[in-house]
Amino acid sequence: MSADKHLQSWQERFEMAEAMQPLLGKLYRNQGVEVVVYGKPLLNASTIEIIKAHRLVRRHVGEKLRLRESFPFVQALSRLAVKQCKVDIGKLAVKYWAEHTDTNEIESYMARELAAAIDHADDIAPRDVVLYGFGRIGRLLARLLIERTGRSNKLRLRAIVLRGGKKGDLEKRASLLRRDSVHGPFNGSVEVDEENNAIIANGTYIQVIYANSPDEVDYTKYGINDALVVDNTGIWKDEAGLGLHLKSPGASKVLLTAPAKGAIKNIVYGVNEGDITPEDIIVSAASCTTNAITPVLKAVNDKYGIENGHVETIHSYTNDQNLIDNYHSADRRGRSAPLNMVITETGAAKAVAKALPVLAGKLTGNAIRVPTPNVSMAIISMNLNAETNKDELNEYLKDTALQSPLQNQIDYTDSTEIVSSDLVGSRYAGVVDSQATIAEGKRAILYVWYDNEFGYSCQVVGVMQTMLGLTTLSLPA
Image (cartoon, helix red, strand yellow):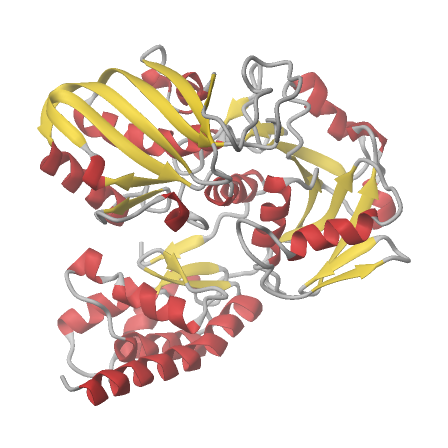
């Protein structure tokens, strides 16, 4: 292909991706239809991101999906009365083109494949969400909730609760939402309503409430009712502490973004969210590390069985550590985080058993905090019940990442050049680095990357939806 043809081909793809964007936006905003390509979300995607999502289809079927092949499916989807579902146009298009040579039957084919979502009764009322705390996880949860803003959105961010309230606090909070040193600028507009103490982000009106205790807020004063309070402060971790939220009028359920103590259910979305019942009013989304390793451990245990193992976490430093050497109640954490590797404890390995009881008592764990601001790695060393090798294990994990029910939790890379900063913004719980896999006989070691902020926040949103009964139909099945 000549240089001119390469440029012409790129121009055609770019223009088709641009034409696709308004259709994708209207489908979500007006009908609650989220379009993906083999699991890659296209909601609010840039033209380049749409093109890249189509190129990644080759990992699934051996060749890329051309935009001119998928665009008619987006057009057909926009003409159908489909509501409140997630539609994988990648899978639909690949299946169709394997059996057809023209576009004549696309609309009738789509009508058959999406019959379960056509004229689907939209009788689920939107639910209010309150973020209690607005730190690293709180602000990323806000971004994730705001990106889904629309008439059909059922998960509505109504308020954030903070301690303090000093002069200038509101503008500083808004500024931290606008700009992030790790995750970049907010995708949209953030305004401050000083008179009413609120932040308005992409049309989402967020009431800012100042309180020193979870039980001293009356949410109903702000028109907030039956709300899910997401506690991302990490201060209260047991039923007595988290139960304080439920004493506030307007709050009905609580989700903790940290491992919980006692009998509170620790949920890893994609693994044991089925354990959540309508009666559960306090739930934990476990830790970022537990979310990263549990899906991979489940996949390995399902096929090979795990006799025992050890998880070593190479974790980016967190806000709990000191910038420079200073007093800290925990061992070693008082030493300067940007200057040292710091050995510390982690309960992630033991916490796996709460989400995956079959591994109870089989795992140990430790952690090393390192001088990077985000993206961590879990090194999982296992003794298996069945023999395998590197190629077989990698092929199984690749298939798990592409085809299994865990495909939204586990990603897979065979790159020989990937480093931690490449994974900033990953929406997966964990990413298997296949080049680092070691496996021989009944012994295996896996290296799993994870964005301990953003990837974990995506998992939290899944738990929020499950707690509120807002799970959506995914098609094709």
